[in-house]
Amino acid sequence: MARTVPPPSRMYAREATAPPAVAEGELLLPRVTRGQRVLLVSPELADVLSTIIARVRDPRTSAIPMLPNYDVAEKIWNPPMPLLFQWTYGGQRTPVSRQLIRNGLNEVLERTGLTDSAGQPLDFAPHDFRRIFITDAIRSGLPPHIAQVLAGHSDINTTMGYNAIYPADAIEAHRAFIARRRSLRPSEEYRTPTNEEWDAFLAHFEKRKLSLGTCARAFGTSCIHEHACVRCSLLRPEPSQRDRLTEIRDNLIDRITEAQREGWLGEVEGLEISLAGAEDKLTQLDAALKPSVIHLGLPTFGEIAARTT
Image 1 (cartoon, rainbow, N blue to C red):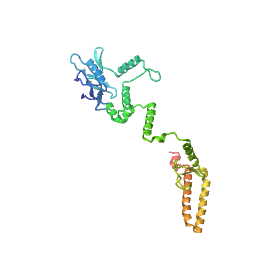
Image 2: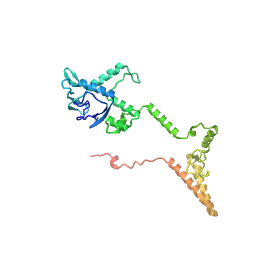
Image 3: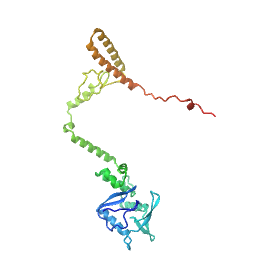
């Protein structure tokens, strides 16, 4: 069932010409900002709305009385509207204030004896139920963009701000993610390794220790440079071994000079590749050890001299 509505009011619900019963379906209500939003009405909620509407109708005209209402958010008085929450007080029809609704809600909570995790009595504002509804809907699988439409938010980030995430939810979601990932991978990858496999795994890290630093190749892979570590990009040199690396570089220069003098041109090419690798490792160490310098610039005379008149 769809209903058209006049301009928005925060306490307005139905038109004065609405029938006494509300059927299950859709109801168009004012949005939080402007325009209209769709409200899904369950049979239980339809019964409650029908009861409220029947109570506020004028028994003589069967119409909902038109009452002015002060909009706290907009700081203006709205024109007379068929407000859903109204009552007779002192012989006069008046809107039910927000504070009165909140006091009645907390009175009901107090009678239930319900408490929070700290043992304190529950204290709810009517707006809290929007947060509870959105959180429960999204956790139950409702797409966030659908919850955005139901809540009447123009920005989905506002809707996600209503969605409360608890630590237990994060843990459960992470465990479910890991379970899904494992279900897609071969089961043999998650078997218990044998003692021989575990020893081989530990031995891999022992073999990564070199005189110049640490080899970063992955477990189960062979050396692509046949243990010519100076040439390899996976060698992570240790700063404490810079002198040793410098000595290797100088030795390579001497060997290249000797090979060129003796005409060993085939060896020169290999030595030059090793020399380039050694110089690259020295450049890496120098870059890592070089302190970062921030140039503040020179102050101008006007910035350091006191102004005089």
